[in-house]
Length: 309
Image (cartoon, rainbow, N blue to C red):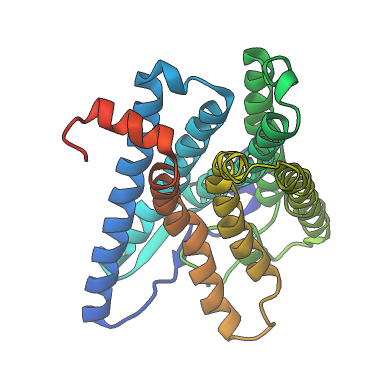
Protein backbone atom coordinates (compact mmCIF):
# COMPACT_ATOMS: atom_id res chain seq x y z
CA UNK A 1 0.00 0.00 0.00
CA UNK A 2 1.46 3.37 -0.97
CA UNK A 3 1.22 5.61 2.04
CA UNK A 4 1.08 8.88 0.12
CA UNK A 5 -2.12 7.75 -1.62
CA UNK A 6 -3.83 8.31 1.72
CA UNK A 7 -2.42 11.69 2.73
CA UNK A 8 -1.77 15.16 1.39
CA UNK A 9 0.64 15.96 4.22
CA UNK A 10 4.27 15.24 3.38
CA UNK A 11 5.66 16.18 6.81
CA UNK A 12 4.55 17.20 10.27
CA UNK A 13 5.82 20.02 12.50
CA UNK A 14 6.66 18.95 16.05
CA UNK A 15 6.37 21.32 19.00
CA UNK A 16 9.36 22.18 21.14
CA UNK A 17 9.35 23.00 24.85
CA UNK A 18 10.27 26.68 24.75
CA UNK A 19 11.17 29.43 22.34
CA UNK A 20 13.60 31.01 24.80
CA UNK A 21 17.18 30.47 23.59
CA UNK A 22 18.78 30.16 27.02
CA UNK A 23 16.13 27.73 28.22
CA UNK A 24 16.55 25.65 25.05
CA UNK A 25 20.29 25.37 25.76
CA UNK A 26 19.54 24.16 29.29
CA UNK A 27 16.96 21.69 28.00
CA UNK A 28 19.36 20.45 25.32
CA UNK A 29 22.04 19.81 27.95
CA UNK A 30 19.56 18.14 30.30
CA UNK A 31 18.04 15.83 27.69
CA UNK A 32 21.43 14.96 26.24
CA UNK A 33 22.67 13.94 29.69
CA UNK A 34 19.49 11.93 30.27
CA UNK A 35 19.94 10.15 26.94
CA UNK A 36 23.61 9.33 27.54
CA UNK A 37 22.86 8.11 31.07
CA UNK A 38 20.00 5.94 29.82
CA UNK A 39 22.15 4.40 27.08
CA UNK A 40 25.21 3.80 29.26
CA UNK A 41 23.27 2.64 32.33
CA UNK A 42 21.12 0.10 30.51
CA UNK A 43 24.03 -1.09 28.34
CA UNK A 44 26.02 -1.60 31.55
CA UNK A 45 23.20 -3.66 33.07
CA UNK A 46 23.07 -5.89 29.97
CA UNK A 47 26.86 -6.31 29.93
CA UNK A 48 27.13 -7.11 33.65
CA UNK A 49 24.36 -9.71 33.50
CA UNK A 50 25.79 -11.28 30.34
CA UNK A 51 29.32 -11.55 31.80
CA UNK A 52 28.26 -13.06 35.13
CA UNK A 53 26.95 -16.66 34.99
CA UNK A 54 25.60 -16.24 38.52
CA UNK A 55 23.07 -13.75 37.15
CA UNK A 56 21.81 -16.07 34.40
CA UNK A 57 18.48 -16.56 36.16
CA UNK A 58 14.89 -15.76 35.09
CA UNK A 59 14.81 -12.55 37.12
CA UNK A 60 17.89 -11.13 35.40
CA UNK A 61 16.84 -12.50 32.03
CA UNK A 62 13.74 -10.31 32.23
CA UNK A 63 15.82 -7.42 33.56
CA UNK A 64 18.01 -7.69 30.44
CA UNK A 65 14.88 -7.42 28.30
CA UNK A 66 13.77 -4.37 30.31
CA UNK A 67 17.16 -2.70 29.80
CA UNK A 68 16.99 -3.40 26.07
CA UNK A 69 13.47 -1.96 25.90
CA UNK A 70 14.63 1.15 27.74
CA UNK A 71 17.47 1.67 25.24
CA UNK A 72 15.31 1.36 22.14
CA UNK A 73 12.40 3.31 23.67
CA UNK A 74 14.46 6.36 24.59
CA UNK A 75 16.33 6.13 21.24
CA UNK A 76 13.00 6.36 19.44
CA UNK A 77 12.19 9.75 20.97
CA UNK A 78 15.16 11.67 22.37
CA UNK A 79 17.36 11.98 19.23
CA UNK A 80 14.52 13.73 17.39
CA UNK A 81 13.82 15.90 20.44
CA UNK A 82 17.51 16.89 20.65
CA UNK A 83 17.52 17.69 16.93
CA UNK A 84 14.57 20.02 17.42
CA UNK A 85 16.30 21.83 20.27
CA UNK A 86 19.49 22.27 18.21
CA UNK A 87 17.63 23.47 15.12
CA UNK A 88 15.13 25.51 17.22
CA UNK A 89 12.31 23.74 15.42
CA UNK A 90 11.60 20.23 14.25
CA UNK A 91 9.83 18.63 11.34
CA UNK A 92 9.33 14.94 10.69
CA UNK A 93 8.32 13.26 7.44
CA UNK A 94 5.04 11.39 7.19
CA UNK A 95 6.84 8.05 6.94
CA UNK A 96 9.19 9.04 9.75
CA UNK A 97 6.21 9.92 11.94
CA UNK A 98 4.55 6.56 11.22
CA UNK A 99 7.84 4.79 12.01
CA UNK A 100 8.21 6.62 15.33
CA UNK A 101 4.58 5.86 16.17
CA UNK A 102 5.10 2.16 15.37
CA UNK A 103 8.25 1.68 17.43
CA UNK A 104 7.21 3.85 20.38
CA UNK A 105 3.86 2.08 20.74
CA UNK A 106 5.61 -1.27 20.37
CA UNK A 107 8.20 -0.65 23.06
CA UNK A 108 5.86 1.02 25.56
CA UNK A 109 3.33 -1.80 25.25
CA UNK A 110 6.07 -4.42 25.58
CA UNK A 111 7.34 -2.73 28.74
CA UNK A 112 3.92 -2.95 30.39
CA UNK A 113 3.68 -6.64 29.48
CA UNK A 114 7.23 -7.27 30.66
CA UNK A 115 6.53 -5.70 34.06
CA UNK A 116 3.64 -8.16 34.44
CA UNK A 117 5.89 -11.09 33.48
CA UNK A 118 8.48 -9.91 36.01
CA UNK A 119 5.80 -9.68 38.70
CA UNK A 120 4.76 -13.27 37.91
CA UNK A 121 8.40 -14.36 38.20
CA UNK A 122 8.65 -12.79 41.67
CA UNK A 123 5.32 -14.38 42.64
CA UNK A 124 6.55 -17.86 41.74
CA UNK A 125 9.93 -17.27 43.42
CA UNK A 126 8.41 -16.16 46.74
CA UNK A 127 5.07 -17.96 46.90
CA UNK A 128 6.01 -21.25 45.16
CA UNK A 129 9.78 -21.58 45.67
CA UNK A 130 9.78 -25.39 45.40
CA UNK A 131 8.27 -25.22 41.90
CA UNK A 132 10.31 -22.24 40.72
CA UNK A 133 12.79 -24.20 38.60
CA UNK A 134 10.01 -25.92 36.67
CA UNK A 135 7.53 -23.05 36.37
CA UNK A 136 10.25 -20.60 35.34
CA UNK A 137 12.41 -22.89 33.23
CA UNK A 138 14.54 -21.53 30.40
CA UNK A 139 11.93 -22.45 27.79
CA UNK A 140 9.13 -20.78 29.79
CA UNK A 141 11.17 -17.59 30.20
CA UNK A 142 11.94 -17.46 26.47
CA UNK A 143 8.25 -18.07 25.70
CA UNK A 144 7.15 -15.27 28.07
CA UNK A 145 9.71 -12.79 26.74
CA UNK A 146 8.94 -13.70 23.13
CA UNK A 147 5.21 -13.26 23.78
CA UNK A 148 5.85 -9.84 25.32
CA UNK A 149 7.59 -8.60 22.17
CA UNK A 150 5.22 -10.39 19.75
CA UNK A 151 1.91 -9.35 21.34
CA UNK A 152 2.96 -5.72 21.51
CA UNK A 153 4.23 -5.89 17.91
CA UNK A 154 0.82 -7.13 16.74
CA UNK A 155 -0.93 -4.35 18.66
CA UNK A 156 1.28 -1.58 17.25
CA UNK A 157 0.91 -3.03 13.74
CA UNK A 158 -2.86 -2.68 14.04
CA UNK A 159 -2.64 0.89 15.36
CA UNK A 160 -0.09 1.98 12.73
CA UNK A 161 -2.01 0.25 9.94
CA UNK A 162 -5.24 2.00 10.93
CA UNK A 163 -3.37 5.30 11.18
CA UNK A 164 -1.88 4.86 7.69
CA UNK A 165 -5.41 4.54 6.27
CA UNK A 166 -6.42 7.99 7.51
CA UNK A 167 -6.40 11.07 5.32
CA UNK A 168 -4.35 14.07 6.53
CA UNK A 169 -5.15 17.25 4.62
CA UNK A 170 -3.78 19.84 7.08
CA UNK A 171 -2.96 21.45 9.43
CA UNK A 172 0.24 19.53 9.99
CA UNK A 173 1.34 20.92 13.38
CA UNK A 174 1.49 18.18 16.04
CA UNK A 175 0.90 19.59 19.53
CA UNK A 176 3.58 17.36 20.99
CA UNK A 177 7.32 16.70 20.63
CA UNK A 178 6.67 13.17 19.31
CA UNK A 179 4.26 11.26 17.08
CA UNK A 180 1.67 9.35 19.06
CA UNK A 181 -1.81 8.08 18.27
CA UNK A 182 -4.04 10.62 20.13
CA UNK A 183 -2.28 13.74 18.78
CA UNK A 184 -2.27 12.42 15.20
CA UNK A 185 -5.96 11.55 15.34
CA UNK A 186 -6.67 15.22 16.09
CA UNK A 187 -5.17 16.12 12.69
CA UNK A 188 -7.04 13.53 10.66
CA UNK A 189 -9.61 14.56 8.07
CA UNK A 190 -11.04 11.02 8.02
CA UNK A 191 -13.40 9.31 10.50
CA UNK A 192 -11.44 7.93 13.46
CA UNK A 193 -14.12 5.80 15.11
CA UNK A 194 -12.32 2.50 14.49
CA UNK A 195 -9.03 3.97 15.70
CA UNK A 196 -10.67 5.15 18.93
CA UNK A 197 -12.25 1.75 19.51
CA UNK A 198 -8.89 0.02 19.11
CA UNK A 199 -7.30 2.56 21.48
CA UNK A 200 -9.85 1.71 24.18
CA UNK A 201 -9.29 -2.03 23.69
CA UNK A 202 -5.49 -1.60 23.86
CA UNK A 203 -5.75 0.67 26.92
CA UNK A 204 -7.91 -1.87 28.75
CA UNK A 205 -5.57 -4.76 27.92
CA UNK A 206 -2.16 -3.13 28.28
CA UNK A 207 -3.10 -0.73 31.05
CA UNK A 208 -5.95 -2.04 33.20
CA UNK A 209 -5.58 -5.83 32.81
CA UNK A 210 -1.80 -5.86 33.19
CA UNK A 211 -1.95 -3.47 36.13
CA UNK A 212 -4.50 -5.69 37.88
CA UNK A 213 -2.42 -8.83 37.20
CA UNK A 214 0.67 -7.10 38.59
CA UNK A 215 -1.19 -5.93 41.68
CA UNK A 216 -2.69 -9.41 42.26
CA UNK A 217 0.80 -10.92 42.02
CA UNK A 218 2.11 -8.46 44.60
CA UNK A 219 -0.92 -9.05 46.79
CA UNK A 220 0.04 -12.72 47.02
CA UNK A 221 3.72 -11.78 47.44
CA UNK A 222 3.05 -9.40 50.33
CA UNK A 223 0.75 -11.94 52.00
CA UNK A 224 3.43 -14.60 51.68
CA UNK A 225 6.15 -12.28 53.05
CA UNK A 226 3.99 -11.31 56.06
CA UNK A 227 3.60 -15.03 56.79
CA UNK A 228 7.35 -15.46 57.20
CA UNK A 229 8.16 -15.59 60.92
CA UNK A 230 11.74 -14.31 61.01
CA UNK A 231 12.49 -10.64 60.39
CA UNK A 232 15.59 -11.59 58.41
CA UNK A 233 13.52 -13.87 56.19
CA UNK A 234 11.04 -11.07 55.51
CA UNK A 235 13.84 -8.66 54.58
CA UNK A 236 15.47 -11.20 52.28
CA UNK A 237 12.18 -12.01 50.53
CA UNK A 238 11.24 -8.35 50.12
CA UNK A 239 14.69 -7.41 48.82
CA UNK A 240 14.22 -9.75 45.84
CA UNK A 241 11.21 -7.79 44.59
CA UNK A 242 11.60 -4.27 46.02
CA UNK A 243 13.45 -2.93 42.95
CA UNK A 244 10.81 -4.25 40.57
CA UNK A 245 7.99 -2.94 42.75
CA UNK A 246 9.58 0.52 42.75
CA UNK A 247 9.88 0.47 38.94
CA UNK A 248 6.25 -0.69 38.62
CA UNK A 249 5.02 2.13 40.88
CA UNK A 250 7.08 4.71 39.00
CA UNK A 251 5.98 3.51 35.54
CA UNK A 252 2.29 3.05 36.29
CA UNK A 253 2.08 6.36 38.15
CA UNK A 254 2.90 8.15 34.88
CA UNK A 255 0.33 6.05 33.02
CA UNK A 256 -2.36 6.70 35.62
CA UNK A 257 -1.52 10.41 35.70
CA UNK A 258 -2.00 10.52 31.94
CA UNK A 259 -5.58 9.26 32.29
CA UNK A 260 -6.61 11.65 35.09
CA UNK A 261 -5.35 14.80 33.38
CA UNK A 262 -8.00 17.52 33.23
CA UNK A 263 -9.47 18.32 29.83
CA UNK A 264 -7.87 21.74 29.67
CA UNK A 265 -5.20 23.51 27.66
CA UNK A 266 -2.65 22.98 30.43
CA UNK A 267 -3.07 19.22 30.04
CA UNK A 268 -1.16 19.42 26.76
CA UNK A 269 1.94 20.70 28.53
CA UNK A 270 1.40 18.15 31.29
CA UNK A 271 1.18 15.48 28.62
CA UNK A 272 4.64 16.42 27.38
CA UNK A 273 6.06 16.12 30.88
CA UNK A 274 4.41 12.73 31.42
CA UNK A 275 5.72 11.52 28.05
CA UNK A 276 9.21 12.57 29.11
CA UNK A 277 8.85 10.61 32.33
CA UNK A 278 8.28 7.28 30.59
CA UNK A 279 10.47 7.87 27.53
CA UNK A 280 13.49 9.55 29.16
CA UNK A 281 13.42 9.69 32.96
CA UNK A 282 12.24 6.13 33.61
CA UNK A 283 14.85 4.51 31.27
CA UNK A 284 17.51 6.57 33.06
CA UNK A 285 16.41 5.68 36.59
CA UNK A 286 15.76 1.96 36.03
CA UNK A 287 19.46 0.95 35.90
CA UNK A 288 20.14 3.03 39.03
CA UNK A 289 17.27 1.40 40.91
CA UNK A 290 18.33 -2.13 39.98
CA UNK A 291 22.03 -1.52 40.64
CA UNK A 292 21.79 0.49 43.86
CA UNK A 293 19.06 -1.62 45.48
CA UNK A 294 20.27 -5.04 44.31
CA UNK A 295 23.10 -6.72 46.18
CA UNK A 296 23.78 -9.29 43.43
CA UNK A 297 24.09 -6.61 40.75
CA UNK A 298 26.44 -4.53 42.92
CA UNK A 299 28.67 -7.60 43.49
CA UNK A 300 28.66 -8.36 39.75
CA UNK A 301 29.56 -4.73 39.00
CA UNK A 302 32.57 -4.96 41.31
CA UNK A 303 33.71 -8.13 39.50
CA UNK A 304 33.54 -6.42 36.11
CA UNK A 305 34.91 -3.11 37.42
CA UNK A 306 37.19 -3.84 40.42
CA UNK A 307 37.77 -0.13 41.05
CA UNK A 308 34.10 0.29 42.08
CA UNK A 309 33.81 0.33 45.87
